[in-house]
Length: 213
Ligand code: URA
Ligand code: SF4
Image 1 (cartoon, helix red, strand yellow):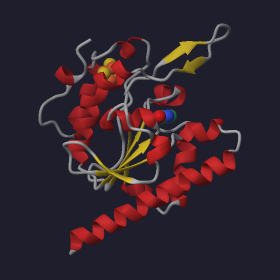
Image 2 (tube, protein in one colour; image 1 turned 120 degrees about the vertical axis):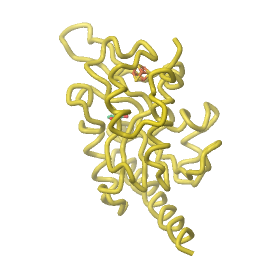
Image 3 (cartoon, helix red, strand yellow; image 1 turned 45 degrees about the horizontal axis):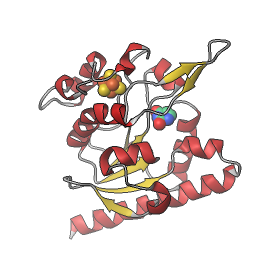
Image 4 (cartoon, protein in one colour; image 1 turned 180 degrees about the vertical axis):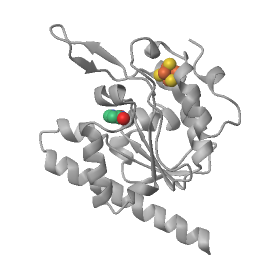
């Protein structure tokens, strides 16, 4: 598996990338998924939020974070004071990974492996190069480890400002909204997510103040 590199057009704008991703054969996930789900949001967004992989609803509809995790994310962003219209939302991996339930047609989400995350990274880097956000928000370890390496621990670093290797952007990592939905204490997990996103919001305003000086 060669990865997505050869499928990402050089110097492409957002529209061209969004079209080209549908022809990607950088790993095997395109074979069973309905379609590639690219990021969405303003091409000049100040915040770029990275999730893991499209889920069942995202795969069907072709848009990121439109299912239950996305609804929760939307609510948490509003509560943290992050302007949704300023946010570009994407995933570390662009094709849905799933297995079929033994009975019935239900498709069960599977976590992408390191090979798929690395294979898909050129798309993520192309999105970053196009949007050039002021701040990156990682939702969960798959997203964070895509750019920060496998030793990065979200549990230890959540809510803190980190630098990206070889890139100008600052980033804040938090948990994935799906983990909030799975949590035994959903309310506490949700509040902890909002707290991290508030830290992202204040990091962003700090960066913007610095830039104006
Ligand atoms: N979970 C993700 O990581 N991304 C989506 O787009 C939806 C659910
Ligand atoms: Fe290409 Fe990423 Fe889809 Fe794999 S998951 S085929 S690398 S777009």
